[in-house]
Structures are given as structure tokens and as C-alpha cells.
Amino acid sequence: MKNRIIFILGPTSSGKTKVAIEFAKKINGEIVSCDSMQVYKDMDVLTQTPIDSLLREAPHHLLKVISPEQEFNAAKFVDMALKAINDIQVKGKVPIFAGGTGLYVKALVDGMFPAP
Image (cartoon, rainbow, N blue to C red):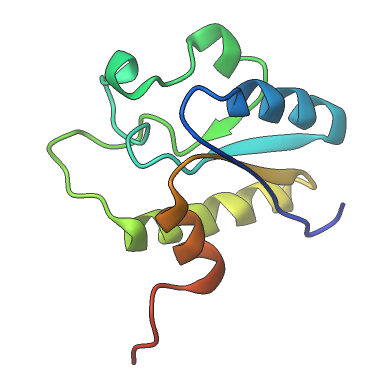
């Protein structure tokens, strides 16, 4: 699994987090959220951020990391996601992206558009 990255994607409330947690336990992984709203602090109910008991079952990244007053976009997500990937892989673990924001996944995997 060295240098592999796994993506578990789909619509809201489809069970992605539970699948990602179980997978993380089996393969020594850590979860990286790729949800455009769960990145915000203090909005757990509105954004359906996983409850704390689930979050304790496996390490999570990019959840509740910025204030709702701050600007956030796909480019910032990519910067933070690349850092999370590196941090996870340095520990010998596998990054598992879970979420439903296709734009963020596309930006990470393919880039947004050709530009200098």
C-alpha cells in the first residue's frame, strides 16, 4: 500500500465515514475529509460532521480547521490536502479521502485548469 491514496466518494449521508473508518483500521490509514463544508469549525450539525465518538476511531484531517468567516476554496483545499498526504505517508500510513465534494477531488487529482 506504500504511496497509495484511496478515495471513498459519494452523496451526503451515504455511509462514507463509517466505511473509511473501518478501512483505516484494517490498512493502517488516516482519513482526510474532502467535504467543502466540514472544513468549518462550529458547524457540525449543519454540515453533518461525524460525531466525536466516530472521529476517535481513526485519525482525521481537514475537519473543523477554519472559521466560517474565513475564505476557503479548492486551491486552499489542495494545499492542505497535499500536506495531509505527506504527513500521513511519512508515518507509513495510507491516506483515505472521504467526502462528497467532487470539485475538491478533481482539483487534487487533475488540477483546476491549465495556467501559468
